[in-house]
Image (spheres, helix red, strand yellow):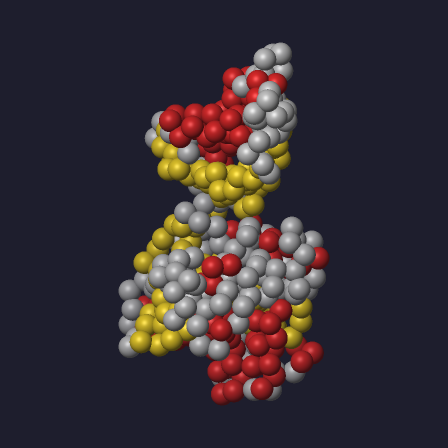
Length: 378
């Protein structure tokens, strides 16, 4: 409940990190064992803190395990006022989400470490990580200083959903910035002299929608998604808009199909440029900048972290479910960087919405699973 009240959107996680640090020091974790990297200095948004890392030497033999969660929330959760009603927690502020994505994950991993230290529980070598800027492209995990982690052999990440849902794969995401240049003119005296960048963008987006390349994309037995999420341009109604910037994304588990979606976006805008010309035959221009946010991955069910998670959940009398996610996770980058990572939920429902809630029974189950994974012999 305390974590939920902290404002900590992407790039502004320092107060969350300070809360974690204070809680750990209160049970005797030495300040020197709590370290922060400088990932925030290389992220697209210059953040106010990096990833927070704690290493514990093992009191029993076994490969090092990593437990992690991300600290940031989406902007809609700023101003949350958490209230408990029965076995659910919601925001009393109707204009905000709860922020359980992912403060519940932070609380789950923090509780596991807190209980191990407080109760002096036996455990294998452990590393705990709380990452930054997950919500805007998994940047904390992508830029994490792996040298601080102690070479873990397996990792477990807590994010949204059911605590018994083990996500062993996720889609890959590509981000695209499209810049459309038109030609300004007076919209009343000489509109025919102008080239509307907005008209070019509208034609291209309509083309993508009508051809089935926007939204859920299903072509030739392959599936992906795309979205035009941000359009910015124009300053006055009496000026033909000469510049529009668009931010879009494409996702698919198949890298080749994801690239095909990107190619269709570029083709649609390139066609639209030729369709809008002024009275003198002058057309606009379009340019593209893109980057791979994260690549898709899928762990084998024989991977040690998958087998360990399955066995741990079953040992607690629960039935695990294997899943593949259509959204990106910090596990995408951890797995890509050589640390196989399973993601589990904490009972969050309707993330990124004002109707977001946290199921407390599922949250406590997540805490039990996290502690078992951190201390168990599996």
